[in-house]
Length: 419
Image 1 (cartoon, helix red, strand yellow):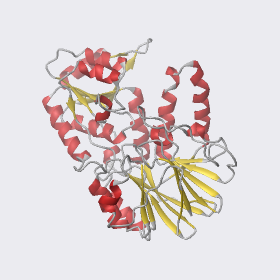
Image 2 (cartoon, rainbow, N blue to C red):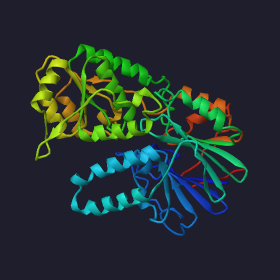
Image 3 (cartoon, rainbow, N blue to C red):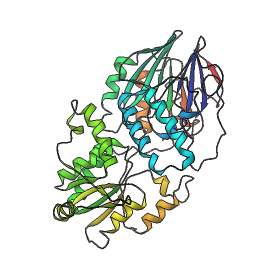
Image 4 (tube, rainbow, N blue to C red):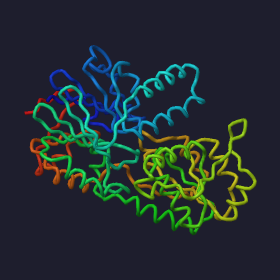
């Protein structure tokens, strides 16, 4: 087996990994680089973006743009594999972009929709083969729903590719049990390391939901700025609202994403059951939101939690409650978007939040902390090495985990031959 990380050995985002066995190429992810970062240039990858692709396949760990955003750069005959629910979520999310695309973006949109319609879906634990390469997808917890690790076997080598994951989400407790079954006799782990520079433990999603519940009990008009595709956060807010005696309000797009997950997963856990009503904002002919009078009366009587996104239509809704003593704005996204010193700082978002200087930051990471990484490595016990990816601090792996297994530091484009 040969391993090549084409991008991601020293940065977060833009990941592309290749597993090659006897000429069969299994690529994992094809992502965009993070905004604000210096670009490493266009990718020209034999068997993926150019050349002979007859023995190539592309597996996607999850639908975040830094893992799937460059999908259209793959040659059109490269088969794409993705989690069943994740594929539906990404298709829904992509379709929503069409009304706001410029004319020159419509062609790309149509091309993307064609690729997604032809994509192959898989489920957790389903064994897939690409030539001599065997792949077992393992569903894990991340801020993108239906995200996966992969156990990859070929040429006598067993490899665990972690993808992005965490140990503090609602579904994280299942990971050690799953690894005990599927990740035995592992030779190498290719591991994400987004948070290896942080020494603190991440707050759990359960704890965050409890804090939201208490906040909603104290405040009547609650607006939470968060990512619509962060499905677990959406359901957490939904449950927190009703536990606090408030109603839950969102737009039709956010509701549709929740319904996709409920349709596939409510049979397994009450967390994804939508037993209480979701109240949906209405749109006028000009695309702006408005409240039916009956809904507005109910919101003022019962109080509410509303999910919002960073655009003028949502801020116009928030403004209708300006001056209300019980209005509270919550920022539930990565701090880097509002940090002036961050390369990913969003000036437009900062300006919007400047109107609400008393907003509350309530968020937890979608990525594992150091303690979770150590637990994984000690459980899996990779016999031949740990290979960092998706991190700006690969050198930290040696300091933190070098006594567990050899740390193999690769450069982008360098090929490592497994032994």
